[in-house]
Length: 338
Ligand code: XIL
Image (cartoon, rainbow, N blue to C red; front, side):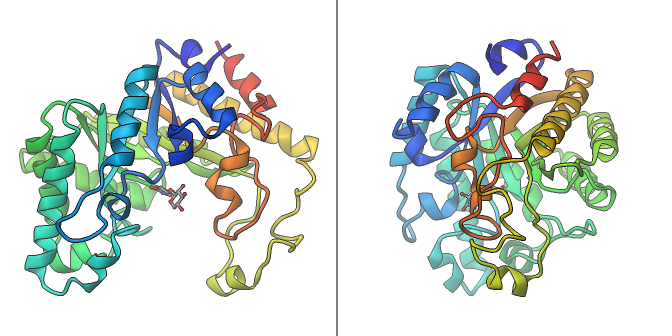
């Protein structure tokens, strides 16, 4: 059974794709992706630092190959991401004036969005612009361009690619305060007469602590604004995450407390993970008319970013397929819903 078949009438089922996976150099992904998924998001290769080696220079090799991979395998591409404070090209750190940053910003959106206009299904136009309290994050964009930069980003993207869906994407934006900030953003873009089609809830959650109530309220409240809801980077990790910065730098891969499952996941946690995924997809099905897409942040546990974040060298188990590419109990509990 495949996820994309099972949820065909409900929402797209996506995965993040790395550059080796696009090149089919990950044999597990080469088999699973065309079989299981009908949507994909580039995990890194469309971020500004990947596309912009220097001022005035673009490198589209990897992004072009991703588009071709999508076309060949009938996989809709969600382009991630145009405007984000993180993974910006090194040269942008030397930008001093607002005028130069404005030039970078305008140029980037116009060039990238027009190149892939009509070839991608959606854009994560702006990523992670909010603080946890719902105020706007103090990024170079906010500091130099002012708080209209988000509206500007959507306006420029819509002009360059009028037909793809435009999303605002963030993490923890199911939590009430951050959600309120997210709602302000959507309202502000709409009030300016600018197109915004959806909101992305990343969905990086923790086993046993998935905020179901907040997720349900968020789907309802976002949908009430007339935008689609996508779950854009879903994974449910099993390892402790909330360390202070100092603790992170001290902890090593051998640290049993931060990396307790090097030899496998205990049955009890495997079961809890399966229950969490089951309950999540139950909720997604309840709101299938509001939800456009559910994207996993990776194909299989062996290549998840959570083996390396926030601490390198951990053994994490956040996805539906294991390190051998075999379906986990979570996979079976999800497909049993239909
Ligand atoms: C992550 C990638 O998975 C990693 O490979 C990379 O080192 C850092 O970025 N929110 C996002 C994604 O919007 O782009 C991030 O992806 C995960 C958090």
